[in-house]
Amino acid sequence: MKDNMTDALYEYKSYEVADLLMASVKLNVKHAIFSGHFPDMPVLPGACMVALVKELLEKESGKKVLIKESDIKFLGIVNPQVDSLLSVEVRWKERSEKAAKINGQMTFNDIVVFKISARIETI
Image (cartoon, rainbow, N blue to C red; front, top):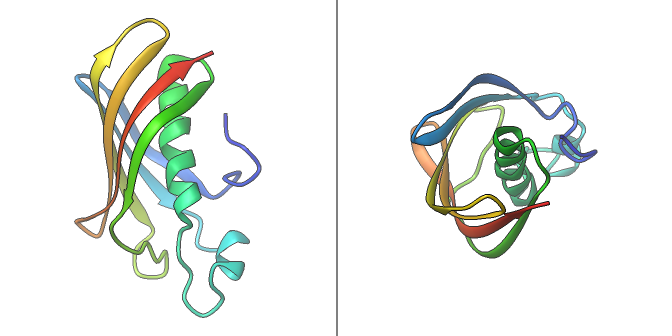
């Protein structure tokens, strides 16, 4: 369920759901988003990090997901020229058929660069 912003931005290297959702993705260093954000030092936009977590939740649930009441922290820079691999983990704190509370994080070069705590709804 990728949108135009993230189309061809990355590909899954691994995807696993057990007690938590874990994924490894490889960024497409040549994606057009990096030429504008920023030309001399490409950085993965924060909106793309949120979109990636949303896409993973939609992949797992098979439904569209709305992120509500979120606390998002951007803790570091993801430069795809340094390394193109990202690791994502999402844990469910509470879960029902149509809603959940989640905690997630994204790791780049063994450093946590993004955290999210949110209530989500499926539609």
